[in-house]
Length: 233
Length: 234
Image 1 (cartoon, rainbow over the protein chains, first blue to last red):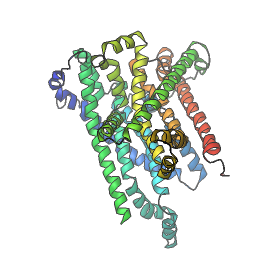
Image 2: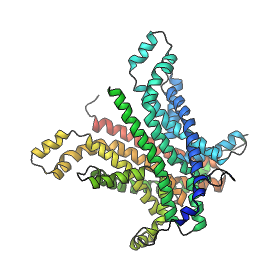
Image 3: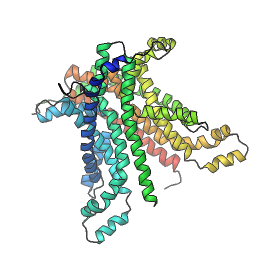
Image 4: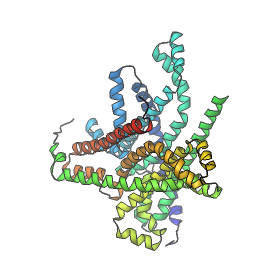
């Protein structure tokens, strides 16, 4: 131990770490981190659902391009996806786009690709007999998927979705790189201002992320156990 | 809207091409150093996690949970900005004498990845039927020798696919090192963009390189699965 740690800097800046300058200014810190994670999670749930269903389509014309897209996104770093959004969105929309929107779009596209794999596995995990039985009672294939297969599959996917949400919380830290003032950015800001306490600040930030992510990880394990138990009876 | 003339020549030859190549070199170096160190550390943690002594298991569990549940970027910042207060003076001196950005990124990537690799190795070992261990023990091997000659050789074979997957994750995660100024591929793509305003070309080049890397390695992996893991399957 070279120098004693002094956590006074955390106490002094605690509200700034948690909510930024809100309510007198824009939301920042942990609040913005959660906002980015929740909005991206909801969007990528639907994105993943659509991509997952399309990737299982009976028509090769749909299936192949969708799989190509999914595998491309999964093959490159999230940071690349965010940079792509950073200069593609303004070019496509013809106007400047707020950084937070850029990050949400990047996170959504990236996470949708991963969520689609969960959806796919969840659907493939439902026995074929279910679809066959549904179709033989007169449902159309899309109705069988929507009313019979998907509701059962979704229940099994919940723990994986929660895990993906944990990844999203961690991934929001990349918003720092395009200058969105979420928790990691606030940390570097305070570090630049105070100079002398980098160790304390980054230990504190890591601890905040840990508490949040560990809570959700434990929740997902508990859900998994419950699902296994329900299946066993 | 799009009034943009493409100029692919800037990323296929000349100075900017060389920047991108040097970036790829750093990305590969970082990934290679990271995967070797992370494998060794991961193996150690996996063994600790399966120890008979509860306190040892707790330490391994705490390590795994902590490093898996905090963002890699924060870990990189911790090692780069904050580690000097908690490391011994000798280590600090040694780190400062090396390329410190690279070292900090390598340490963070190693530790982060080792936590994921440890779980892969552990599930590899647990997937070997315990009769193998019992048979080895009753044939007179000690616990460690049974591990060495019977369990680990089989476990390593089935752990290789998830390990390769972790290597790909590591290569992608190494892009975060740009945030502390390591001049790897993403950093160089960004440099090319800011010097030439040809962002589309620069990011396409980097994207193609990352994709090429994962396509090649995934293909090798499929070959391994076919030839080594399931040699008798049609």
